Length: 235
Image (cartoon, rainbow, N blue to C red; front, top):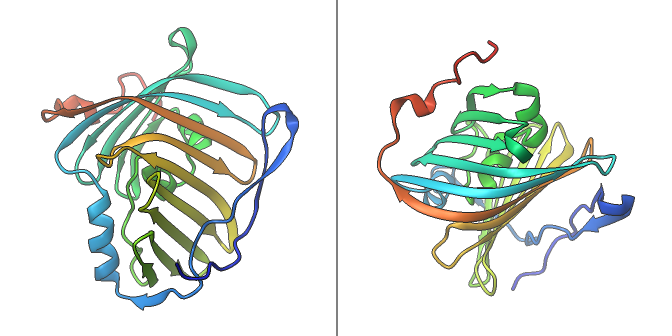
């Protein structure tokens, strides 16, 4: 495989208030120029077709070492729409969002959803999916039998995707915004390509979100009210 370029080490406050470094993203040094159309075609191969209903357990740890956990559900209408719900212990701490591509139509409560997942590409990467590059972004890529890597760069924003194709299949994303690291996703995929577990690291303030997927089902089209903001939610 090609020589890997140096990556940035993500330092997070984890359990027990110990600081640990995340391994650099395995992006090769010799990425080659590619077109936005090629990148969009690749991204489309990572997104689900039809309707899928995923259930998961989640846990969240903030910069002070405080933890929360619960269960959740992602109802996906391929290729790019998802209703995402989480609930804490004993039915408390509910939050939900409706996302289409790189746009959030609503989130309730917004501050809680933003705390869990502050960036749409990171959100989709936890489900094992990539978004196409933004209009005007420069695109570079690399592919061999072991991995596929893509870099999308626009001004000071950079997204780097890696698909590990040998051994345990993984889908990775590292995001920089305004030149600074924002977050990193590591999603382990099942042999059928559906997500098995995902971990999101946020840099500042440091936090970690883990999803463990427990149920995967093909679904019939969801009811229209699935996409409607919950009644009584704040506007």
